[in-house]
Length: 94
Image (cartoon, rainbow, N blue to C red):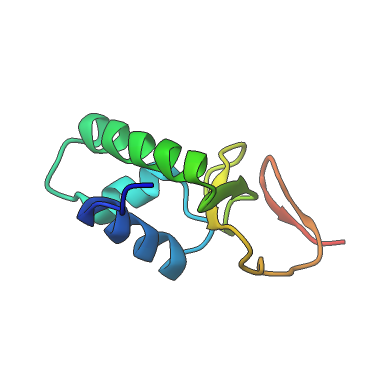
């Protein structure tokens, strides 16, 4: 297996520091100078390759994120535990 490239390592550290961010939020964080369309495509390709390697996975978006968009997490890392679920109009406490 080939070693990770510098942009992939940079993306992994961003995912580790910001668990649950969506791919578009990661793209805006890593490439603020690029138009969102191009940076989003770039990050989506890198996330797809990292997912094939088994390093990242999709799960519930972080609080305050856009509904129905999966968040990106490192495999094996604990998720923030908060009672309730993310509804259409925001977080619903149980």
